[in-house]
Image (cartoon, rainbow, N blue to C red; front, side, top):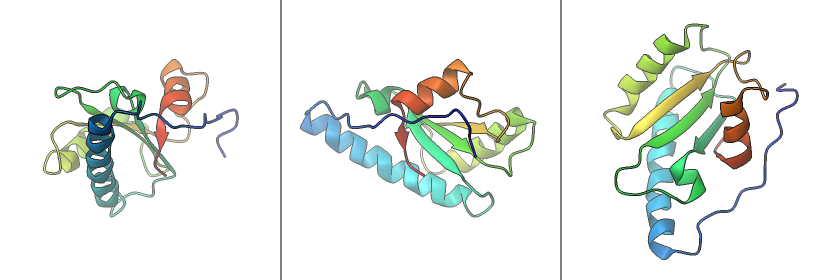
Length: 122
C-alpha cells in the first residue's frame, strides 16, 4: 500500500513518570480527535510525531498528528483547515498534518521523520 515506508519500533517515555502521565493524557486527546475525524474520513494511518513522540515536550508543546486518508483531496491546505476546525474544540494544541496516499512519500524528509520517530496510532 505505502511502498517503501518502513516504521521504526517505538518506545519512548524516558522513564519519567510525569512525562509518561503527560503522554497518557495526550494519547487520550489524540484518540478523541481521531474518533471525530473518522466520522467523516477513512483513516489508514495516523502518527503522533514531534516533541511528544520524542519525549521532549513541555507545557508549550503542540500536539503534532500526521493523518493519512484516501479521502483527502489534493488540496491539503484546505484539508488541514477542516481538520483544525475539528481539533480546536477538543484541544487547541492539536496540529493536524493531513496526507493523501500520493503525498505520504517515504522520500519526503517529514514523512521519513514521522515514520522513523513517530508513534503509530492507527
